[in-house]
Length: 163
Image (cartoon, one colour):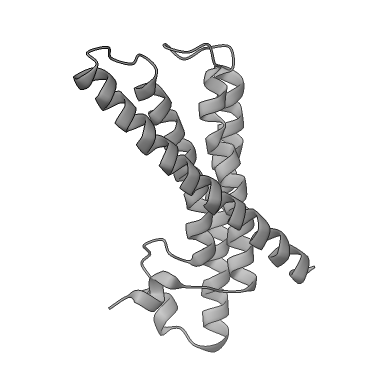
């Protein structure tokens, strides 16, 4: 079971990382287009700013899953650093449980939010607002897998790089 979770996590976290990087490239290109359209061509684009905002939300939520997996989120880690033996294991379980509970709330309310806004559309595009808000439950669900994987196979980039 452990290997299955870690294999699934490796694939999903890698895909999330790749997609987040691609979204950053797309957002950068859209930002450049917006500047060119407004200041060079004097024809401001009506959809780029809104697209960039929505893609940025997706990029961040995908990136959060990667950050959870790598243990790269800023944390108050004094208790974990000083804990030894069974207490360290208990602290890790508390951290994992708390993170999973928080992410489960994000999934639950994110799904609720998506269902509420699914009939609204973007101001400049005929797309459902549900697509933008779907980043919340999707990213939180991916992060839940990353939290479990980090518990099974700890990687603590944040702790390792701390001064």
